[in-house]
Image (cartoon, rainbow, N blue to C red; front, side):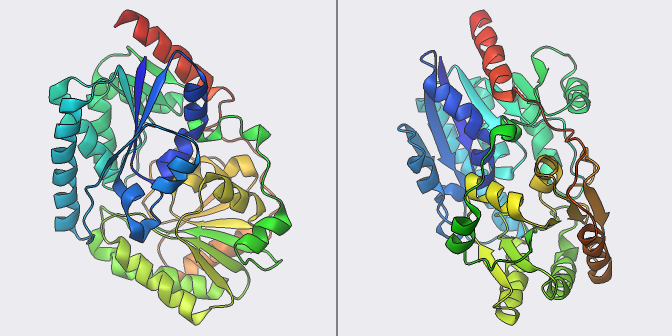
Length: 370
């Protein structure tokens, strides 16, 4: 069975990894990686090398992002991605192609496959992020897909509502948490030395723009910087940089200013990779920002999360999440609440122990009937 894997960023590749390893080791599958988006962007760490370093031999590359991140640039990148994938689907055939999540370039790749009758399997459909335009892209991908692997029953119900039937809709949990109970972080001394983190408590910070409320992003980014400047007096800050979203550069500039002002209290990481990021989450005192990893993964590491703004609004949350608006004082107060807590010991609503095995079982069944 010939399987294609659409991966457009460091984030989705890390989520895919448990499944990719099993597909690679199973002789039933012929696996090919289709890398595009920020994987090929030097300003975002050129993470194609991470895919290559994992030992995947057949990697297609499609470059389609342009440098700017305003609305016109994103729309142009979307169109260019769809145009280039039209040629790719014309010349490359698969039994099944995996797509993940909700990014605009993922949507463009999938939409261009519709006339070619490409069979897509979608991961993380049915979710809601009211503060990001990705909500629209996610549902577009769902409607174009033949198989649906969701992270929770609530999301399966929403997919069924969208597509009008329950055929090939499966609740498997979040793939990124597959076998998380066996995760071993990098040795603490080695990890801290590798990234120049002092031997003290640190916050793991990731902020992205709100792509629905774009006109407010300058204010949001400024409030973020002001809040983090106060948090930096209490905790060291390990900041992972924003993805290629509309107005992402606004947040980058504020983060760079913060780094210049607090050079001994802040480090900025363009691309951690999954093992390093999970190790950072393991050792962090708290997570701060508006990234999906705080919502989906942090509970499995026993961490509290300050989730800021509306980017993740509408997503199912576990009890480790403290929500705050994009205001300096509100963010500081939410962080202070986490600092008096011990580690989170509740459940993670996104966890299923056997996600990758469930997916493989279902795609083999799907192959038998096509």
